[in-house]
Image (cartoon, rainbow, N blue to C red):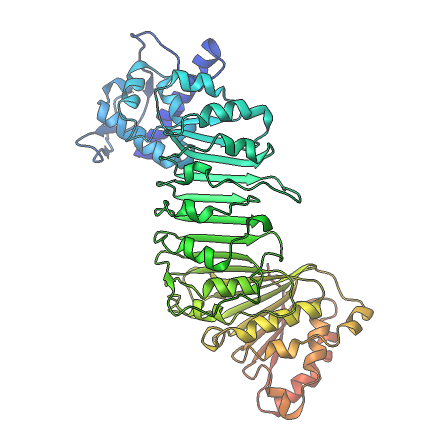
Length: 532
């Protein structure tokens, strides 16, 4: 048995004993109970190994051929017991705040051992749904506080206020669904929270009008904040708060209402000092949140560098993205996810420059285009990496295959040659899984597939799903003679999703296959099972 298994076994012992004590003495297991001073610690039978201890962090597990039939916890030095507690709680991660109270309910020795090292064990009091917060904070030592409520409504308002009345101790605030008036919640969060590390405020779908967080929120300062997640919550004075949050690692501004709109210039300025930021998400509720075309400034001569940023998510209009990435650089960017609202023209000339600074020793070699009822998605990735990696994902919210393909063609035509020229495999799939009717095919005769294919000159293998196949074949059949190699000149293999019409589909594509063969660039046809 290794240290991990032994630690978990001790925790299970603590859980069983504390549960039995809870049933006999108190219905609230998180409230500490006073046990007699002569409480004996439990015994663990047949542990199967002996623990040899030296200094902190150097406990050794040594298997023995001759095992004592009974080893008690009493034989473990306090330092070893503390090592085990620390190891197990560290392994539990976010669940540690729910677990450590079970240890102090076992016996006095365990209680003294745990409370003697609150910093080492990172002890925190968890205030959650169903917890009598006032009573809980009165009986526990003045430890740091984590506040986690998945549904914030007037019924739990008293408990939440009781927890927030200790701003110097609060480390985490997690409100998953805020159903109470936002101004009521903000009113009790006007003081600085100097120890706050994580803030998650998720408001239920807010409706047409949403009150904004005031500039006095958190006293305008959160110096230890490392993670900030706001959803459906306007916060126009966010830049002021971020001026004090230089250690921020994760910033997620999700579904920003139009009333909380921040210009690209203001957004770039408030994140420019966040040198430890690794994940950034910015998304808007409405396409109305866009820069003023009259006052849009030219790209700056210098840009702010975000040296630690690896993940960037954006949802909005292309003009906002352009103006934002024109002002920042992220040399370590590894994953980019973009979702555009439906618009006639997509302007992304600055995006290729932003991408070009990514440390991609192996260029993307695979592209996916997935067509849905209400959006189209494209993904650029590398299959040459040891693990499958998606580098750039872009979605466009629009309907109609002709509009969807035209939008994707605009995006691909503006991506830098160095980025898209390495694409050798192209997958196209209609994820609606609905076969087009003859009438629908007639309407789609002008779908700009050829315009899209012009961007993929290096593609050697093309995969086409069955539902979208007739439309693409109609476009490829137009190519003959010298024009047969003007589109997809490097194409060697064409995979068609296998189905009952596979043989007839082969005949449909024959004019294109013959034209390619005559041009000296033959293409082979293969069956395909589709994307799984």
